[in-house]
Image 1 (spheres, one colour):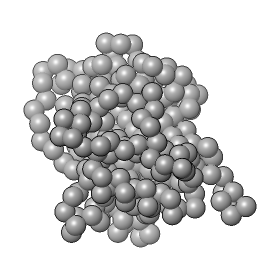
Image 2 (cartoon, helix red, strand yellow):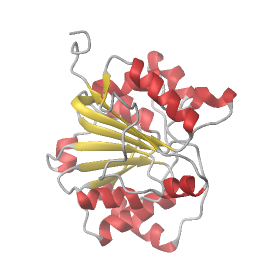
Image 3 (cartoon, one colour):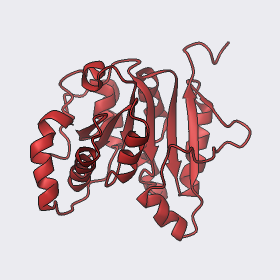
Image 4 (cartoon, rainbow, N blue to C red):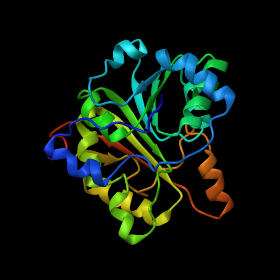
Length: 246
């Protein structure tokens, strides 16, 4: 009922990138009875499967609210907190972890959060096939898999091809917000974002930004801090086409 993602007939220009990079690493966890119940009840109205077969009408889905895409949300606690703190922003939260999907929907129902929708599947397909140009007010990528082994670096999400894919979907001025506790990945993120002409650093002096007040401490962040890892936030603004060269 909730597959880990189905692939459309990919266009040739994007097929290699899609095979090489996914927005997730599959995990298997047990779904609780409560999570299964909320998925059964709420998925038809609050969930969507990333099938690559339709273009989403985000205005209709979120009642005209500006929409932020969150790629990977774990068990959803931080996502629910951000939705509660900012009810005037819609959050389209994409992940493949079924227990996390169920928990986020449970939190949304419990707290009356009508500004959350949950997408099941690969965010690369969602971005490439289902989100129209200029439809997003922001993208959040918090604690993506760092793929620490050198031979796996090509699987990291934040790479030039991903930034190319994201840029047309962001409104001018929208922010791509990344966070990681893996210093080598933070350095790579900073390098590729700084080099891309479609984005400008909101903290050009320091490179990294302080954690914004709107981003709660996540489960992964707490684990990293316990291990003594520094947490890096990167906030890069989408510049209007042609502005970088002006």
